[in-house]
Length: 285
Image (tube, rainbow, N blue to C red; front, side, top):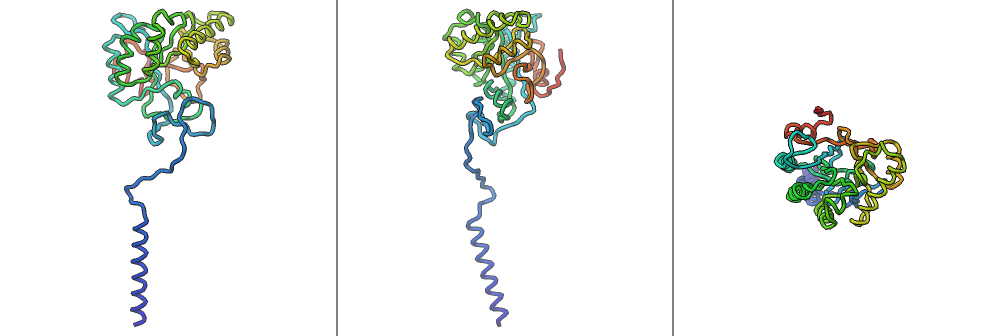
């Protein structure tokens, strides 16, 4: 009789324990995440903090081995010039990026990734345009706005107020196209004296800073031409990143003032574009 009583007591105790545990346990399909503060990747120098791009959830971040930076120049019908891409092919490229879920990022985001290990959106890419052709505003910008793509215009200082009005440049900025420096008169800097180089760099920065009320921090070498003097001047003037015409992806550990880009012209069809976006050692043409 005593054994039966003890067995019954044990069963009552176990049943109560199971009920208590099931009542206070978290369901398996419930996900909870501690409310830890997250700082957005605006490029500010605060080491030791986790950086997350503005508007990006932490669980959506990627940490790729490298980022492709696409380099476009002129958009138009001109043939037999691979610095030009037809409007139709350019439209194909942007549609492909959109349909394949590529996420164009800003240079601030790229800087935070390179210098602070900040996470990026999945499938990041940078879209750049050199020289300041009118078609960047008339053809490229409407399509970029349609897809809500961020991009970058590298413009010589002499083209400010000439190729584009101040209002047009401000419209570009408001639409997600950064306006960055490409020298003052688009001369190959390595062929200039250190004094002439400093003048080229200082004047374009002063022009963009004044007209657009910004602190210009990003540079692209005209013709890909630069030397050690050029980089020292850029560093002294507060530039964070500078881009060459050397082929390849941008990766952590690269010299921030000698970053690679991917040439894009009419010869780059969708197959070759896909290769450049997915393989760092893509075939050269």
